[in-house]
Image (tube, rainbow, N blue to C red; front, side):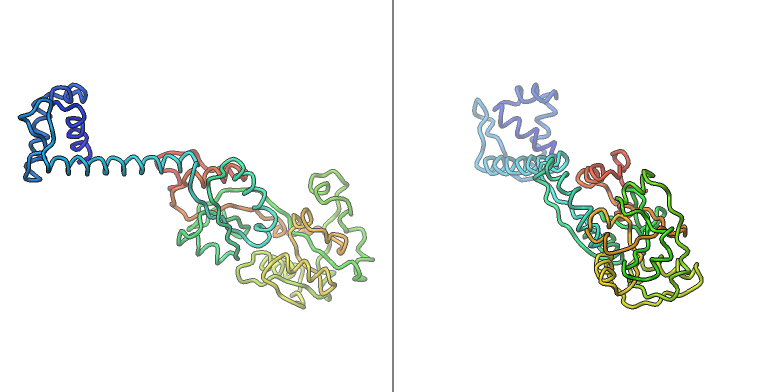
Length: 326
């Protein structure tokens, strides 16, 4: 239909079948047949052929006015999606736990919006279960998490980087005195992870079988699951003094001397509470985990999603007609 109305609109613009046919690179008889077919369908002539140049009938004027509105709507539609494609407008929803929403995502969002200020961003905070459900229902475009697996059957994942889990023990605990050889250095942990300071052996976790722990709740918290599993690897079940939903809460409570806590090493890049703890490396394979961005499997990655992943350093696959499909 759009081709048909463009042909009719060209006749209106040129006020001549001959000139319109030449402009459209079609024969005049073919163009005349297209117009006649449209006139038969609406039951009324569009053009008054008795005048030179052609003029519109009353019904033809209504028809052309409607064509103008259709063509304008088409232009608006194309302009809108062109703007989205070029990121001159649009929206993006990004999610993560309180740690990522507080410390990691703000820098990424700032960098993205400085380049694409007309794309609005909605930041959603939640645990893994909440983030997964929102992504599966397409209420959330992208989220960042550690508990998402590379081969997750329902999520398309994009590797961000790996992180290390450490044990933080309140500095006043006497056990720290006999484990000095295992303490991580007081210098920046960044220097330790980069190998800029001498390595420290992992602490024997069984030494902490009698002390209390501040643990993350297992439901929706990979760190809680891993912490409990590492204790069991060492031959004991942790004595839980208090359970929390968020790693930031666990760190602040542990800093008050309530108990030791399994914490992400990255936390101490952002939090000023390092001097409240003695920190220990862990020998378990569970103390190392990958961080992924994720979205619903099979979902098309629009330009905003793809560009945000690139800005974040989690490069998406190359764009294409089937981008996002697995």
